[in-house]
Image (cartoon, rainbow, N blue to C red; front, side, top):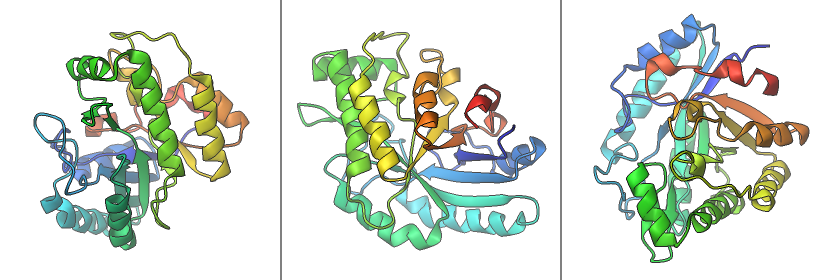
Length: 268
């Protein structure tokens, strides 16, 4: 069995991605036999939140938002006979910014077709925020701030759980993005703990809310990760629980559309 859609794809509106044109992603998807694609660009961060990365490039700029939606829907109409195109967002769940996130979702829900809810930002004990997947150097600083790698992992999984349980309004995304992103640098910062209780709690809450799980192949190609987000063992458990598993390449370049999908066929 093959997957017919890639449901986690970025665009030239991603400041930390490539400048590949929308059409390049669409044409690559068509060439690979896909019939559906979801553009889920990083939604602008809450206006009162200060992006913690040096270049302030974690998400789309507010000034680009209207153009992003306009171009996406133009292409959706242009290619409607070739494939189904969804235009949406990858929404950051940021602790203490739930109200602003809810307002954004309420405002822009009429203009989108799909959305993912992800955790990239962690609030440290010193009240500073860290982008956990930015760089190995940043991850090391985060470990120092939290006190240990164990505390980082615990904070991440608890924040993912918090995102699932959070009241983000009636238009809250129902797909949880790359739920083990904290393992992106595991080769550099090994951690043998499994966190089975937290992971099972996350899966149980996803099941209880009838949410979906992003089967994200990007981790396979990160040199310090080399595994799916989430791992095969977690995906197997999710499959046994009859949780909907939704494939996503997390492509930031058009050549990476559906990359690694051959590794997740057993979960289709």
